[in-house]
Amino acid sequence: TPPDCYVVIGNPIAHSKSPTIHARFATETAQDIDYQHLLAPLGGFEVAVQTFIKQGGKGANVTVPFKLLAYALATSLTARAQAAGAVNTLAFNNGEILGDNTDGVGLVADIVSNANVTIAGKRILLLGAGGAARGALLPLLQAKPFQLVLANRTVSKAQELAQQFAQKFPDEQHIVACGFEDIHDQFDLIINATSASLQAEVPPIAHTAFGAQTFAYDMMYGQQSTVFMQFASAHGASVRDGLGMLVEQAAESFFLWRAVRPQTSGVYAALRAQLST
Ligand code: NDP
Image 1 (cartoon, protein in one colour):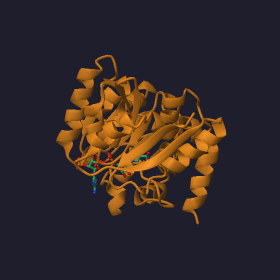
Image 2 (tube, helix red, strand yellow):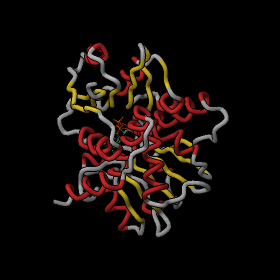
Image 3 (spheres, protein in one colour):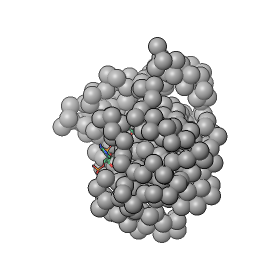
Image 4 (cartoon, rainbow, N blue to C red):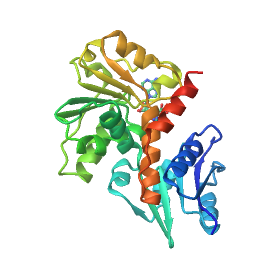
């Protein structure tokens, strides 16, 4: 029998490391799969997915700019995809298109399991209110922090997001929404889910938010260190970039598709080594 086929769909897509990561997971878990890049035209996401399904495709990762369209296309959604309002993983099964979001759970796995940082009982500051921040909210709250403060450049977006979340998940702890200028107190964990690092900018929060007890996480990856990480470590914090999140979200997708959990440390070390060359 031919291998089950998977793709990562985006535009642009050639840079994506997902095929490398999944190929390595497959070898290590002895799963016979084929995983390729799929470039979809900007107006052609749905057609690309439906064509891939007709060809027998079993699943897809979805990246920029299609995560909201993937959410709309899914015929069923996991709770964390509903919470995120965005989908990064699709699974195709007898006409069903299941949408999941593994970004947030990948972030939490990287923080808790790889960096050995506790979330339970801690004060967390999440910067940003875009797709990455939305995906992180439910998994972060499920790790039972003492408090979660959501700060965004456009404050109304943080407020809307906090409100939507409270409506969808009335049983979860509430999120405090604010602007960057409202941040002064020190936090245990500060997660940068803005794309400011891409423009070599740091969200303008007071340096007093960082201290020796602070763990600062930048979701961005692909550089040795980001300006956010440099700012945080200059004020005493421990820092980590988003490479581990990338690998962990992939492992969660792989698990959803194959029901086998791959080891992530080997792939992570290989990608890290590539960055430093
Ligand atoms: P979006 O475009 O959806 O959201 C961007 C967010 O960044 C908004 O909150 C925006 O604020 C804020 N922002 C943009 N520029 C600035 C700036 N100069 N100063 C302050 N805030 C700014 O992006 P995503 O949420 O999809 O992605 C965010 C980051 O997370 C990216 O760097 C991406 O690479 C990374 N990421 C990493 C993943 C991983 O696996 N490691 C997975 C997913 C994302 P406003 O609302 O005011 O416009």
